[in-house]
Image (tube, rainbow, N blue to C red):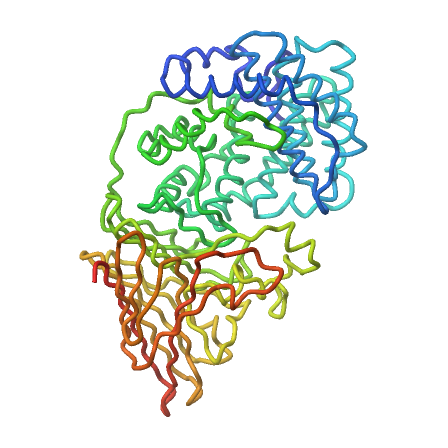
Length: 580
């Protein structure tokens, strides 16, 4: 049995007794005032926009769902900031239009979850501003098109371990709390289901040290909705039922700090973008765990950029949960980030290691990726790495592809089988990653790169299971030195004599040279030296891509080959020397 839910509104994300008093503190801060001005600006723009329509993109309604969530969050927050009725009326218009959709696309349940969250917040926060007809229409839609479909048929996300679990349960709990006074049994069943099943995804996502298996971009997605769910429970019940105590969650901000390199780009493994914008999740986490050091220089800059933006149109979704940050922002003191190392821990679903030589823009940075291609949003990148020095990313990862673009061309994007189309996609398969290949073959999808030694001066990975069809042992050692140079050593044994090992690097820098590779970017230079004779091969990404791939302008794949001697053993070492 759950504790009793307040029979008054609002009760979502805010304490039913204190309501929106927290906004007074936030508006007393420079960051809070700036963000509030942006939210009110967007609400003003939305007054001129027509409500969204039910327009599918392939099999998804998700673009519409996200747009609705941003619109309702912005309009509802603008109303509580200004008490101007026009914002509440426009939000009601949006919610009633969406409530009138035939359905919210339950076959792709993320779409349902985000719309349900939007209408739940709007219904709850603006309850006193809605008339009886509007309340009935929105409440009925939340129940019939949001919550009840989650109990109809089979939904793998209920017990899943990835971001679907987090997003969908958050949306359902929001809807349940909003309509709890009219559907108490359904609400309790929905909330208890989430409390039982959220630990599955939280343990997989954050344990043991806070690293997110799907990469920093999906950290932003999964963690924001995890935080929404916890904030909903705390607002309604004054507790989160121990969910925030799951190992790794209270330190997950360290992962975000570590994943942001000196250039401001992310360690963008898996289906990840290059940068992470200002995050509602981070603001809540800073507040909840009293970690002002997570309000980093990058986070401050990202928040300032968001606050200064003045979009002229809002037909597409923005940073849809950012308005909720106004409940938690403070003038946190500036603190220095001093930890130069980060390790996900042996038990992490996708092990990673991060090294840096300091916190200046010119310092060196190394991000090392373990795990399996078959992991969540996985790429064929076991043992791959990114490397920066002198403010340049020399060793790159291209990150995510456009899902709809690939799906619309008939490719099996989500099939992780060994022969799947997924591994033909340039950004996802082996062709674009900083790995070695044996006789041109791919890594084994069921294999897994394990970090077997993590120390301040080196990281060692056992890659054997990724190449088990061609090698008895494969180990990669990476050493980021105090002088900012990097050495990568691959030790292979049990190979077929005369087989060909191709060592490859993905870079956005200009490349030239034969025995020694020279990279240039922005007036900076880097020498790359190998311990084997033979020329470097330099090819443009376009020459390796298919017609279905997204463009990768300026990207080069540089590589060299080595033949395996008669004893079947080979050692390759490559050194990156900044400034040479």
